[in-house]
Length: 257
Image (tube, rainbow, N blue to C red):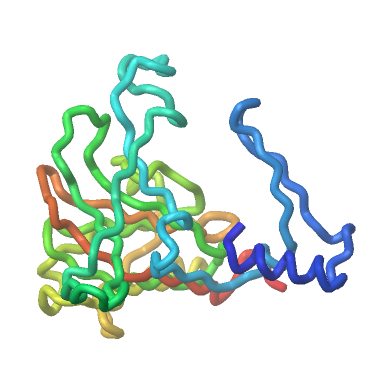
């Protein structure tokens, strides 16, 4: 549960506005060691917007890579999907902000960087992130980004996949490569993708201007709910792409109020 939703939930409990009968208790996890219980306000399921500017860290998305290991693996050096992880895409200082003078406080913000760093220990060096948003049959995602290196692949799906999964595009409803030359210049730009399952199309805009329109490869029964961003780099790309924020809105939610 996101922090703001947890606060709303606790406020309702504290004020006596939430009866025990309308809470949702969820048990999840694949084995005894990973099993958890979660309780949440059902209003959370009806939200139609989500955004993240990473000011509170990367707890709202998946960003891991996998270390080659025999430990826990049953397919050679693949390792175990739970305990052979290490961080991939990470937060760095916004490249357009100067370091504050001593004693000036924390005025510099951080942004997400998706790059490719050479590391022979990894199953795949291809950094990426996966972000969940309210499921929608018609909706839009917006990414404020600055492409410095090889570019990134924007993928929309109805299910979670590993951030470094190189087959994500083939298993998703929509995927498109975005490179530096697609942008007006090497500064910050707003990339938007709006989909409509009724028409079966996705329209891409850059800074509010039409860029491209492509068909959905598949039309999921319950709409799209995951944004998958991944570096296009085939070799080392230490700068990659910077991302300031991500937003999503469900224009036609899969679970209408």
